[in-house]
Amino acid sequence: MFTKILVANRGEIALRIMRACHEMGIQTVAVHSEVDTDSLHVRFADEAVCIGPNPPGESYLNFNRIISAAEITSAEAIHPGYGFLSENSEFAEAVTSCGIAWVGPSQEAIEKMGNKSQAKDMMRQAGVPVIPGSDGPVSDEKEALRVADEIGYPVIIKAASGGGGRGMRVARDTQDLANALLIARAEAESAFGDASVYLEKYLPTPRHVEVQLLGDSYGSIVHLGERECSIQRRHQKLIEESPCAALIPELRDRLLNTAVQGARSIGYTSAGTMEFLVQGDDFYFMEMNTRIQVEHPVTEMVTGRDLIKEMIAVAAGQPLSFAQKDVRFTGHAIECRINAEDPMREFAPCPGKVGFVHLPGGMGVRVDSHVYQGYTISPYYDSMIAKVICHGLNREEAVRRMIRALEECVVDGVHSTIDFQRAILQEPRFERGDLSTRFLEGYQWDGETLVLGGAVAAK
Ligand code: MV4
Image (cartoon, rainbow, N blue to C red; front, side, top):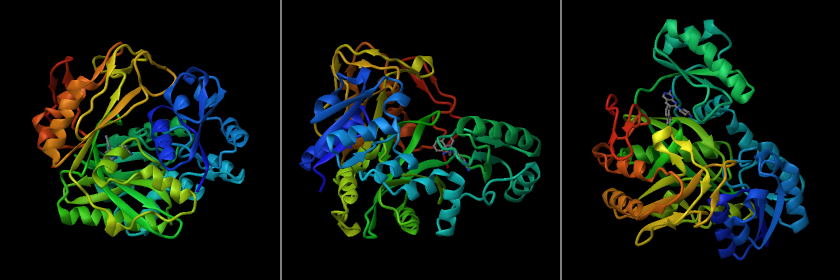
């Protein structure tokens, strides 16, 4: 096992990783920008290295500075967390070629899954259902028209190098398509430096359901169930839960086993997530995230398994500490990402100094946060304040516990998403588990009352 790991990240995920390291008897190295000098991840670490100024490109995204920090502190491994360099295959390769272990999947796996069109192709070949559409990128308008005609309208155009919803366009009919194609291409080029796009049948009211996977270097691959992340706003997840309320046992088994089969086909190691769209009784592969995700604690609460510890063990050449048959799913868990954003102003980030803070506690409540009274939320990085995760015997108890936990929360000095999230949890449609990725389409919020658009019911 490693004796020292460098954590190439900041905020709550850096703390989360260091907590696992400390429990494993592994020393930790923090890296940080200037503005993060007083941050908790620096205090939690056994050693800390300032790697540069606040713009991420000069610190948290800077290959050389991070690798140099690992070298001068003799760290044997680097955990990238999420965001920043976590899905950068060139960084993974730079790290390993310096003789430092990468706590994540292979450089090849990151690269393969990074191209969404190619990933879809590989999963189709592995027998994973994919949304009907073009065979890889479409070369011109003529081909797009032919494919759209074949699969039927509406269709959605997606960037091959995309993800996160950028460069996506829906076309309702032939007239729409040419225009949508031009816009999608231009957006893809400017956002990803790659104008290639592919076509899919547009699903009217899908649910976003993702499967948590773990693989080791001995060929063992397990799933840790699914998470439903349909409650999003502009592709920012607000609430995640496990299990998904919509899956009957037969469908759930099929989804989970299919995800394992897909991961096995690419020899996947470490933690990863396969994202699916679920429409009625059908599910379709969407993309694979080759990193630990923000919402991983939801899975930890229902399985009792520590995903970060498993990632570290696998990177050190050990087998997974358990087999599929050992995994038990208990109760229901929900996470709210509390952000310093103003729901009254289009969720504009609200950096600034936090006054009085009280984060919730009590039975079944986990809080992952790097924020403390007097902490300043920097405009340079994401505006997360805390993740509140609640576990209950069933969905109803988990939801009620979350409402209770959010009512306990006090974060003075900055706007936050707390009241908005509480209002969602109190919506009858949420209570019924009647979710889709369009749940928040056309909502109104006056700071107290949430009125849903209502035009789209999930099917
Ligand atoms: C779709 C879709 C409907 N039909 N594909 C959005 C993010 C990107 N990774 C894929 N996305 C979607 N793809 C087809 N064929 C609807 C979405 C979508 C969505 C998906 C997951 C979570 C939230 C979403 C919000 C809007 C649209």
